[in-house]
Length: 526
Image (cartoon, rainbow, N blue to C red; front, side):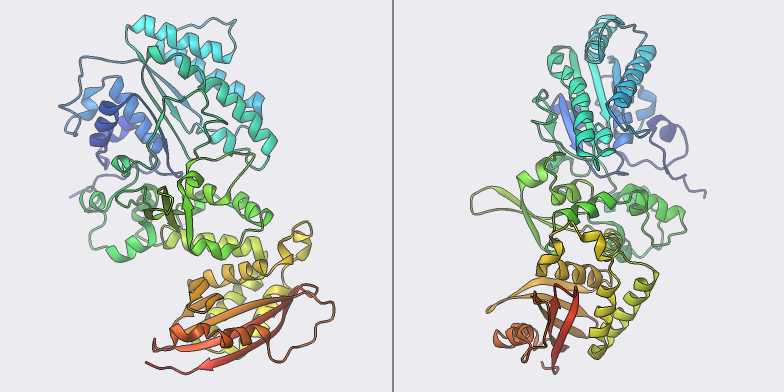
């Protein structure tokens, strides 16, 4: 039997439905969406199927029933009514300034005029033209108008490296989106989607009618593939697959509901002869994120155990970029757990969604923090072998080689080097790239040790100290190791049947390197 084709890079609903192409029926959620309200906003990471969802809505409101035969919504929709649709799609091209944005908006408005058979008054500015288009469309078709906006935020994200330019572009978009508030009486349905959610003050001040369904459990799976989707729609393509491995690599995105896979990952995994690779991550480089982490001297080990308020996840602004907000909204972090904090407010525990993202993000972090090159990639392999064997005698020279290879001129304008946090961040990034189990600020009943690293049959309990003297003299005893022993940080690991090493690391700010390392081995005990 010939298997249906894969909808790889196809965002056109009609093309999928008219061909022998796999389609995951999302129309039950679409029906709930349309039946329950009028104006929505949805944020999801890139390559998550947002554009296909927007196109599905377009075909539905235009009344193209043949495309929906056999789907959930077929016998529930009133096909006797067709609604005119205005679609603004900012997905294509890179807009580098306000002038290019205005030109793009003008083109989009012109394309909609041509498709709807409307001619707007040329005397109007862009917002006036959009308003005129809505009014004339309502008049011509005798029905309220549907407005769909895809990748509404892409022009801003295209300029995120340049805050002033990004703010200028944001104002241009705000000028257009604010029209929707004044035209509410003429609108049947509004749907906006993108990667990030900007604060209402900065972009949505005129769009109070939008309901944000980004973290609404009722719509958690409206984009993305569930486990059931894979076992039914893609059953033939995934016959015999190792489900545990597939889940580990690509599942784990959660939006307060059932976990989902990124569709792009799954389609490329199948089409690539089911090879496990970093498919989604390769489509976008998080270089800006890495720069942001460096600029804000972010303590990388915090990524292992992030607990944040709903406010931090809720909105993003170019003048005050929170790297955690950006990591979540762009898909590098996802919700692991939701709970109510002591103040009665919703809070979240965040985590990297899956192995694909963890491995690729860690590689980017060590490149950003260590300026890794071919030599350091070889060093990483050596470090993995060393830790996995418990050959701790070789750890000090290996770490010294790592820090000696970092081009410090790249950090001359940062306060990053003046704290233990930088050295802990470099170590975290390097150890995390080995897929080691890392517990930063590992809590015991006597306090917190800086970092615990577990790999194979060995556990390394590490304390870091930063010495700021100009002429470092080796200290006896090593204060970092002494602290581990005095507070018995390793106690919790004594009975796990593994070999435990207590490791005291001292870095010197002037030498910008590890200057002293002492250790003690605790024998296995059960």
